[in-house]
Image (tube, rainbow, N blue to C red; front, side):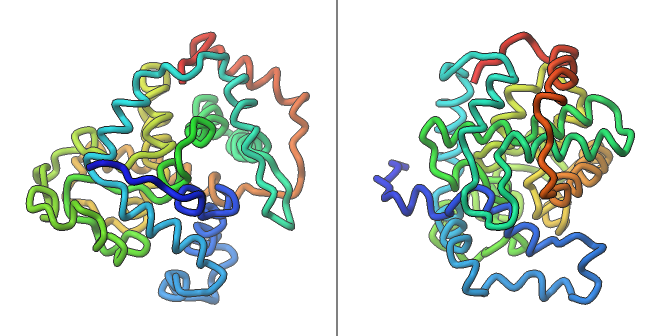
Length: 293
């Protein structure tokens, strides 16, 4: 598949990457605040305020083909864009500042520190805390020129039929894989309970960061990083037929991580200078002095 020339709107339909995360909160609100609504009400994607998110998913679902993912893996998994300390990579990521949120003006680093500090406050292992701090670092893909829909968004398997439990499933009608008999059946190129390690996921910041950290972090941390945007599975159980027993055990960690990612946003700004020594020591415990992006 030859990638078409994209307009600015096709590259960046969202005002900021955080617009996708705000949409996740609308779909999957904090249970403590959502008792008055039904699940069906939360899956209402037709509200006018979500027009940009709808356009984002139209593009995501059209262009995230099996071939596209293979192209991106070949391009980015050479890790030849930059090399820098992890904290430097986080500061590089921090140039993606969200100017669209009228209530909470947090940059990327502050959001990640809030997530990690909430995990630390609940007494989880230090590698879990580090995962909270790192989990969005793969968004640096935007700084390398990737369109938003190839960086964020709900992730899903490619190479098999698209589940109707993925957000805006109707947009997959424009995805060439939906017409490919090799890819448009329930199992596609996979087999029953083959295990997610044998399944290719749509391309984005989750898979990219997993590939960067896979030799350094504990396996539960890697599952959190790799599948934290796989809402069609960890919220909808749409791909149970591909998971093996090991995946099911590891997804308990994904489920444990998800609330910290979604619900830790707060107007209280972390004091970066106070927290930096702790996180630099934690990074040094688990990761090399520099990482290749």
